[in-house]
Amino acid sequence: MTFKERFFLNFIKDSRWHYLTDGLIVTLEVTFFAVLLGILIGVIVAAVRSTHDKLIGNTKSKFSKFILKFFNSIANVYLTVIRGTPVTVQLMIAYYIIFVTSNNKILVAVLAFGINSGAYVAEIVRSGIMSVDEGQFEAGRSLGFNYVQTMFHIVLPQAFKNVLPALANEFIVLLKETSVSGYVALQDLTRGGDIIRGRTYDAFFPLLAVAGIYLIMVMAFTKLVSLLERRLRKSER
Amino acid sequence: MKKFLKLSSIILALVMTVCCFAGCSSNDAEKSNVLTMATSADFPPYEYYENDEIVGIDIEIMNAVCEIIGMELEPQDMSFDSVIGAAQTGKTDIAMSGITITEDRKNMVDFTIPYTSTAQSIIVVSGGEISEKADLEGKKIGVQINTTGDTQVTEEFGDDAVDRFQNGALAVESLKNGKVDCVVIDGEVAKALVAANDGLEIIADAYSIEEYAIALKKGNTELLDKINSALEQLLADGTIDTIMDKYIEE
Image (tube, rainbow over all chains, first blue to last red; front, side, top):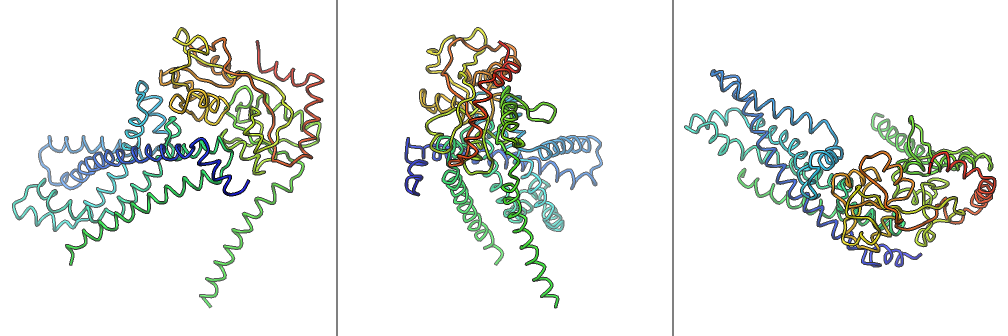
């Protein structure tokens, strides 16, 4: 078969390209909502962990100490379990055990990937909060801000700038991790390529096409992040 | 001097890596006495794991073939959707994994004579709505990805009616949880899955009837002829029937 014939067989015949475009939409959908969920969980967990680390030393009341420790240990269990098991296994547990009754595969995938990503985002955000100099915090407090205000107006904006590259990294990883969605019969981009491969018995075109699409998505995302980074750096001049 | 050492060590490392890769590919081809077999060992009773070893009908038949042609069998476990590709590209000598002969597949690989035939069965939850093949219309059907069950069901009912799973066990798990309404899968596998799970049954109508054969890289006629004559011998003297009876009780 010539190059042209193989291309026709893999993508045009029986409108097989549909498997790729439909799969791409599923991949984007899952990634987008999983990123949102990941940020939400990540920021909450990071706030719990860093508040504990910053305040536990100078808290006197027994009750506040208990509250801090309680939430911190929940966050720690979450981090240990999620970071200690592979995302493929978590996804299968979510689909076949936890959400047994749910038939909405996209929702299950969003929850599984979002909860997974949240653990990594949490540690990234915490590293950002801890990287801001203690003096910044003290300055905020001495100006009359309370703890939450200082966090919000002074520490977090600086932390965000510090963690942006690591955060972008995590989202790139997440985008590619969704390629295991096929394990729960969800037809994402990778699975779309697999299906074409199974119909045409040609590994070359479907795999390269899938790889190319992921690469383009990541490159576009990287470009956006670098624009954002440049914009944020304006204040430093 | 330091720079030179650094440079030469990098070059040395590169050369060694390349040698390593080259070694991998050439070694396999040289061991002419070993017959490598691509198989997806999640397909009982044809191929499955028992005490860390791949066993099953296909393995026993191929062992008998190898005895006749004087080679040593080395099964390699992989996902079913890679099995035919492995034979097609010559990564393994043969692919044998309950592979049905189809026209599409004949374009990519050469097939031996069929060694057995089987039905695509329909598994349902006992006492459910589906009792014959005609009831499948409008239902969600679970299949193992890229099996003939998958392609046939997709062709008949369209993409939206099909949920494609990595293996039969995951498809049946989804059937039990009500995520799909039935599972279409090879007959013997269906029996094994129903036996292992309570509350499931195979309906009397078969989805379709098909033949299993061994796939080889196109143009490897020398090995193809050898295996064909060995299979003919085993079919004639009843060895294959004995093996089938050992695994399948009816």
